[in-house]
Amino acid sequence: MGEAHASLAVEAHVGVEQITVKLELHDISQALYQRMLNARPALNETTIPEAILAYMEEEGLEDVYYKDPELSFDNASRTVKASFTLAGRGLVDFSYNRTTMARTYEVEAGWRKADVEVREGGRVLLKLNFSSYFGLPLGKWQVVGYGGREALFLNSTTEDELDPVWYFVLPKGARLVRASGDKFTFELPATFMDKFLASPFWPFLAVVAAILVAISYRKAAVRLVRP
Image: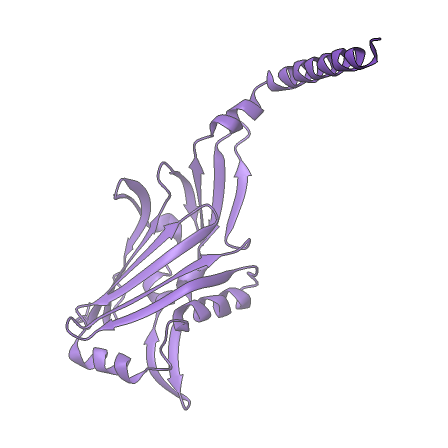
């Protein structure tokens, strides 16, 4: 691998309805940092999430949007940080494990391969080759611990001017079930209400409750008509 001009760290914190993405470019060489500065305002807080939405649309993946985009430059440390949140029905699919009543979530993660190009006047000012860095099928990523949570991790060895790593961090208490291609599935333990609804006793309890309500109503009606 050639000499890296910067280190790229991506954390995608997965929730049950959205994914918060944090990117940090640090240890940036003077030349690359200047290129990024020169790429503004074409390089702004919406550049990366817009590239992701364009990629998903090309792949036929819809019902996804982003919110809260941010981008910051620290000239003293030559560090660039970006963050945004992805959400929508096309991102996370929810179901129940009918055996355990655990909550199961299937996450669409193909968007990690969205390349980012910053152009001005037809000239490419900057390109981030995410498809090259992170295109390895998710089944070949490592499962690691990250801050007390399970995570999918890739330390890319792609020859490029960046030294990139990526973490998909699961919710607290979640367990990775499988990862394959561009999707991964995790489970969260069943809640008390989930277990109650799965219990064979709750229909009986519902019938008892209905009978008690009917008896109470009948007694109230009798009191109203008593002379």
